[in-house]
Length: 380
Image (cartoon, rainbow, N blue to C red; front, side):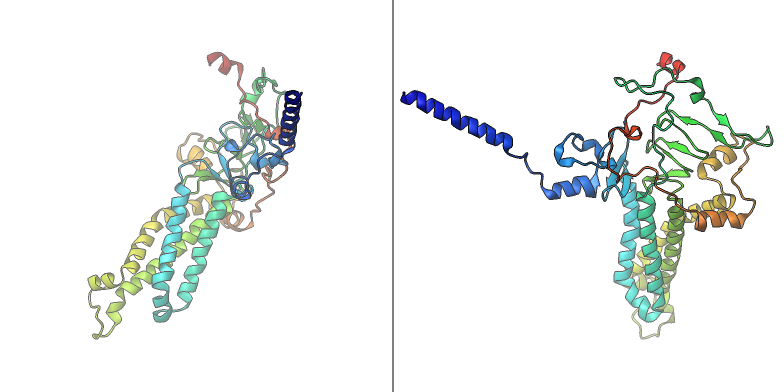
């Protein structure tokens, strides 16, 4: 009897333990971990599945149903970077570090010997360069939503659209008053499953369609399009101004010995750069850093004066691929074109909202295989 009672007690005790385990909540995820992976820097590809209870409700930036999507979101989906070599970080440091060196070693001398306005002016354009770089590299370039124009619903097992119409693989040429000229062409994107609006291109690096895409910038690690082209233009302008005024100030510091009295201990150029090496280093750095932004500035001044994108310029003007190309978006006024691109163009609304609550039934965020014609399927 005693053995049976002991067995029943042990059985009851194990039952209590099992029920206690079932009622015990799942292991608590530390706040700092959730803060870093779900808000600060979020890679949707490595997050747990949406079925996990502790992540509900989820945001659009936390779910990645598309294949080969290369976005990493920052600050709760308010910005993004592309999974590439971190050239953007190197570029940001190339702007940040010289400015810090300038304010540590040069600004005090320039304030007292030249003018207090010069360090203030330098700080203004340097901070503008940093802010415009952050905005241009992390903001939405004009990404368009997916799966808007589906010829039919996909197969739920294969996620493929079977037997798509042939017109989805053709280009549509909008009417123009002269048949010999090429005006506006509309194409279907088989990856994003949308009819691309005029001047929209699919970026193979970001794997998204971007409205009025100018180019994909490796230094920003982001596309430059309708919603951040304004930031890009003012970024290269601010960098050019900053490099020019820093170069002038630092060379004035290096050659200041020429206007000093004989009692000074600096009499030659070699003595000057030995005593003020940071001034000479910043001058050389600014000259080298001015070359590429200055070329970009000249190029985009021309492009914006014609209201033409870099892609259109390279595909239709320089390459002579389309000799009948007509830029129908040109306003016939250089100053009006410059005003449109540099000042008055609105950013527009955010079409794809990463911070909205994720809806699994929203077809825009569902994975659908790229559209393939019958000829492509037979060849593959």
